[in-house]
Length: 476
Image 1 (cartoon, helix red, strand yellow):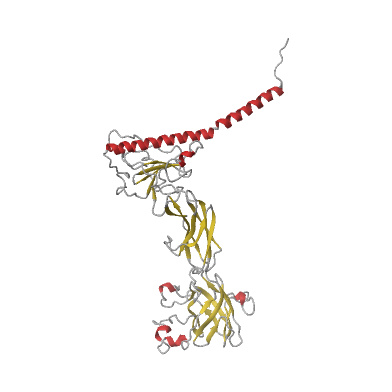
Image 2 (cartoon, helix red, strand yellow):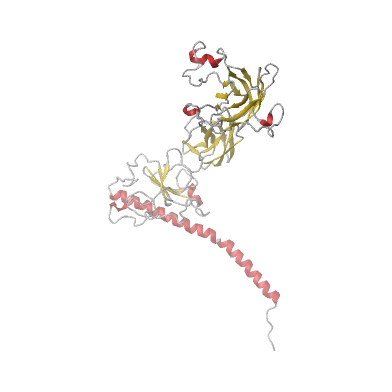
């Protein structure tokens, strides 16, 4: 009689049961957690070995130990504001992924070749070879030993403190019950308060809503670490690195999140530098942490033009006020001037062929007064039907380049707009001569200005128009 085998349904049921049992076993065993526990057990064993080796060395050298070793200047009795880490150098520097330290602190890393040496040139700077045999033959390093993951060993001296980040659930409570001042790190040593707090993390974000004289600074508080409340704020200024100054927009924060600050009264066309910071009380001490410095350029000043220019032959040139029935309409854009100015004798002076009193005439005559956004120097031509072309820059007219920052050389002239929107310098017309835009400027070839010599002392008389206070400027 033939024996009957398993049916397909029975086989599938057996396989399903085995799969379920396998999942249950995996959940119970949790191999990923077991690996974390194994790594943590090694970390605890490593720290026990290092702690024991330092204790033996202290006893064998008679109680006086150089805690920062022979390769670092000075002793460490008062601390050296250095965090020695077990990750190797990247090039000539410590890995950039290491968290920011408080002001005045720095990291120390060594090459991969020296990492585990015990003569003081390894990642831990103590020289264990000063006694024979040394209590350690090789320096332990973290099982992961990677800056980006946060898994590495650190050492800080005054006496000494070792710290690392345990990763398993089984050992996590040790971080809270090790007697140290950081509940997120496992700490071991003779003084568990000397390591700087590494928990407050701040990021500087890009500035937004940047205008000529204002901007919004942005940052984020990413982690309060051991602090329960912090004060977030910004440092900013027009030089780098940002100098310590009164913080702007201080604001209390008790949880991670974004923060911002609107700053005003900035100088147009200027690069500003800033960083987001936060400070909090950790282990009874107020400590400050800052994000990486960023920068932004304010926009150049733009807007409607105001005021008067002057020429000895035709007199006042108005950029805003109606004069002898002529109504100006002029403005400064980022890279050029628009509209027209007015003279009581010669009527409109067009600054841009697209925006003349008669509309766009560029197809007949293509001209414009251009503006360099970086320097504020103007170039190109304006036009008047009676006196013709008005040149704003000697280089445009085929002469030498104009650089007001270095003074005016022979044959140089130009008009420029400073960071506050004020016009300076001279334009030239072959028929009427110099047109000056600011009474305080020196006349071509003069050595003193109107403000210091008075109108009775030439050559100021020729262009100061009886000492009238005039200038052309952008209305900000």
